[in-house]
Amino acid sequence: MKKNNPPKHVAIICDGNRSWARKRGLKVFVGHEKAVNEVFETLIDHSIEIGLEYLTFWIFSTENWKRDKVEVDFLMNLFRKIFDERLDEWSKKGVRIKMIGDINGFEEDIQERIRKGVEKTKNNVLKSTGKQFTVTLAMNYGGRDELKRTFQKIAQKVADGKLKPEEIDEKLIAENLDTSYMPDPEVIIRTGEDNTRLSGFMSWQHQYAEIIFPKFNFPDFTAKKLDEVLDEFYSRNRRFGG
Image (cartoon, rainbow, N blue to C red; front, side, top):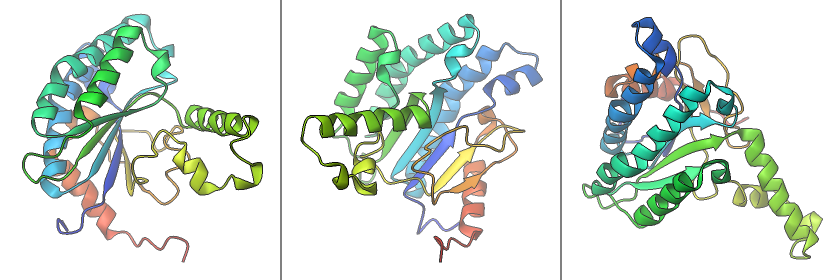
């Protein structure tokens, strides 16, 4: 693998937690727990090792509220655990934490955890390299929802007289997206054994991303598998329309 020239931003659609658990005769919650307790840590550590700058995990979509209430409640408690426990571990390494999605959809205590976590880590740099490495959690996130909120922000600026309609261009739109602080992903990975779609993930940002659909579920994601996925990325001829 070309470790001397890794992509800056890898984004992962974390799919297959429930399938992983069901195949093993386990409750679906076990797959979610393994993802948070083991897989995130493994991928974060390896991403730091190979020199990524941004790593994004889509962990809860705007459509996931439709799931069984017991599972949704479990996931909400798991999110609390991320910010109460995992975030401290990541922060000790110097990881910066960001969040994209509509925070207002969560209960107030989760919103507060997110705000505090983002604020606490905003100036973090890696202890190992002194460089900044950002882990973004996409929570209550949907690509169309992001675009809707972005256009609403821009429309309000027009209504307030702070912006003229003819001043709206791609740069302005990008600056008002949830992801304005980071580059578009060069690689989007969707795990899971049978899905080959993005389900609206980063609808604006994925234009030149290489989309890879490995045939394993997220709880089986290892450092070696990340290397293998990136090897596929390196093998592709990226011409950007040329």
